Image: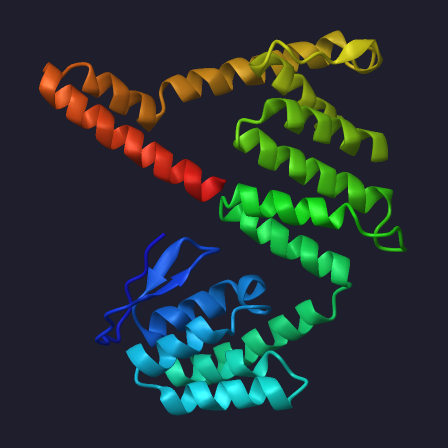
Amino acid sequence: MSLLLCRQEQVKRPLYIESLGIRIYSSQELAYVIYNHPLLVMDGFLNEALFTFLREELNLGFLALKLERWLKSSDDPDEPLIMLLQESDYYSAGEISRYRNQISGIRRKHPAEYRKMRADELFYLRQYGRAAEQYKDLLELPKSQVVNDEFLSVVWNNLGSCYARMFRMEQAFDAYRQAYSKQADLRILHQMYCLTKLNTNLKLGDRFKALISQELQTQWDSSIEAAQAGAEDSSQVRQLEDLFNRDSIRRQEGEARLLHKWKQEYRTMA
């Protein structure tokens, strides 16, 4: 992810946004992150690193002091986000008003729902390791009207999806199994079936096999074959094929660059 906005400011030490894996270089980039990722900035975002960035890099020392004082003296933790948006001159008054309503709506959510939304946002951003940790924390919550079997099934399912995308297939399979035990959903069974095709060490067992008709199995096998065919034609596979058409020295250089790129992507996920 990268940002390029209008206002140019002389920033020597950009602010690193860990949850997004990016560095920002201007007040408008800061506003863009706040506006487009409210779930990731509503708690813990306003910290000393941000205040230092405002003071030392953006020459906004008065604003930093104002934000610090507000956080110490007010019960409203979200008004500083509005102040930052207003300072940027990047969003209109109407857009800022809609943002205020959006975060107010999020704050009215049950704490468990709010925490799940944050984990879902990390998953959407491919921060699978961080999302998985938050999903696991949700599973430790006591049962309530909100934290019921349906809620827990979704959390287990999403945790399984995190593990699957980190290639931790056994853990993914176990998470899906836990999800199915909370709520018998055919989509979860489908995901378990797919994992058994990707990892032959995983077994559905007689209980789950009995739930899959021959028609369903044929349909799922077809979808897996189509996905595998698509993967074979993916851009990364084409990059590899292109490498093997080069001379040995260039091929080694290309392999190193591609491997480094994949490692960087994996570190971001985990």
